[in-house]
Image (cartoon, helix red, strand yellow):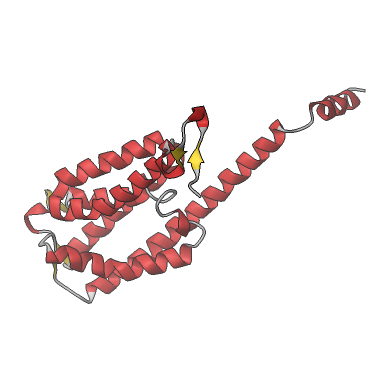
Length: 214
């Protein structure tokens, strides 16, 4: 049976509704983000990230997600700068140099921000499963950089150093999803209590107020 949205007399499949279309768009954009950044660089990565920001805005997820994509963008940028200084990674001519300070290309930050924009949408399954999320992300870290090396996006000077990157991802993503889980539960509790207050019996409240004034 084909589920449909019949509002306004229109027979529209559920997957074609505006909300679900945005979810599908977010999934597609996250899938394309890695390829756009690694292969296309900052310009094409920026286009995909702009699309992710737009879907976040249309879904009204800003207030919930902005702390996560800001913090994850900063943490990811610092981590990749650390790997450059440690001699584990080399981004060649794409490395951003500010005097003695060397940073990974801007598209690396875009990838981290893109993940932060997807925590409560594409990656929502992992919010209540931080250990699983941390394990999977840590396991995927070396393969992500090795795949990037195949496209000449990065030079890996130490395969053993990939273990350090994997370990850092384990810590970062465990903490990230633990905090996201706490934020999600706090929001649900707030919404539940708000609905309870709205749905309270007005006569009961009036009687209670009258008794308290006697």
